[in-house]
Length: 172
Image 1 (cartoon, rainbow, N blue to C red):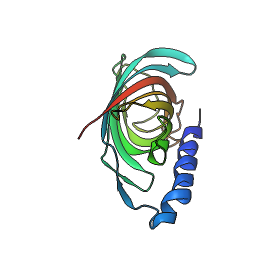
Image 2: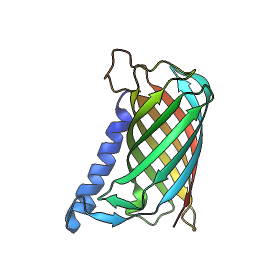
Image 3: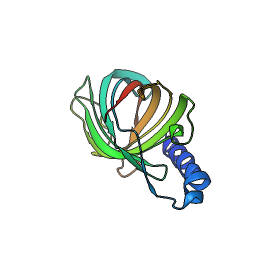
Image 4: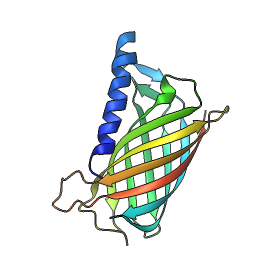
């Protein structure tokens, strides 16, 4: 997987911004957003072979700028590979009350190999696409596919994918 998920993030979020936020007085106007803490379990896939499990913890900030909600997160694999980063998330929840939603994200971060795969350097971009369900209490359950790579900033750039289930709960 190349930069396809990053492109999907840009298309979804910028389309939303153009169709909704820019028409209401400010493309990057600040809005309140639902702050959530998330925990995610994933299966790590490297060059089409399953490698190990991964656990991810994240925090979605209580605001957004236009369609972009700031988010931070970190993950650890069963091979002690660590990734931490922060970036932006887009969700169809921003403009629809329908409980089923899609989300995309793009997060630059730092990767420490541990016993995991050599991904070429420590700067890595994590992009994701997911489908989820929002419960009446605001908690969400999502299935996500994400890709992590150094974006060709290094000569070696094999990339890494995860297939995950994420539960996020609202914090006040």
